[in-house]
Amino acid sequence: MASLEDIIIDVDGHIQIVKLNRPHVRNALRERTLLEIYSALKRFESDPERKVMIITSAVDGVFCAGGDVKEMIKMTSSDAKRFAETAHKVLEEIEGIPKPIISAVDGVALGAGFDLAIACDICIASRRAIFGQPPPAIGIITPFGGTQRLARIVGPIVAKYLFFTGETLDAERAYQLGIVCKVVEPEKLLEEAKDIAQRILTRAPLAIGFCKKLINSSIVKSIDEEEVLLYSKCFETRDREEGMRAFLEKRRPTFVGR
Image (cartoon, rainbow, N blue to C red; front, side):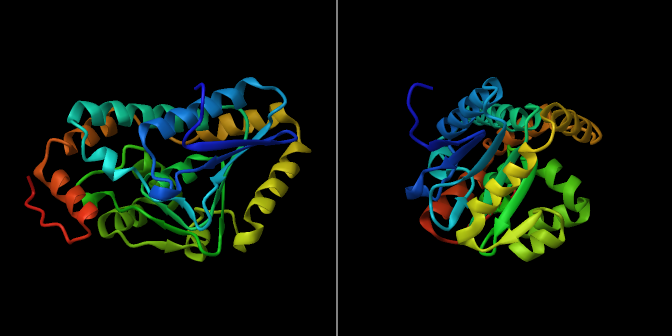
């Protein structure tokens, strides 16, 4: 894209750093954000000098609060389908690039933010990180593949519990469940991500790429059209409109199952 509004891209030697930068909405993801991330991924993939990528936040104490409800509440079912397809394209690009991508999470990583973090090859977190899956509270599912990715990491029982109840995880619990590899102090988060990147840079890049491909292919991949379809169908329901309006109006929703 010609200009960036929602992210910042820095380069430190062979490391490309992408920072989410929508402070007024706690880095909530809209379609433009996804397209900017996709553009950054394609640049990373094509530049032989950029060997490791870090996805983090330019906003102190926030990784990503999820999808942008102010944008989503205006969506039709067909709009939602297009948004979900864009989300899948971006996260599948993260998994498909034969170079390592690290997520460095500080503060909230909810819904789409949680899904973005665990689509990366390595996830590290600050001690104040909070992970959660609130989409059913506003009448939708995640369109970011989180139902499948999270279940592969923590198992279906825990994944269902987190989606069904909306209970959040602090950094230590996320570490115990294998969601994050390391927990560090907030002020050391980016430094630790760069340190991991530097350690990766000492190893053979082709071998690293092959490892990524083999590990990813060892997992049954079913993040496909069904999630896109079901996400778009949420936007045909009364509960989706009620859930999002209640969220924006800061009140408890009244769901009717239609």
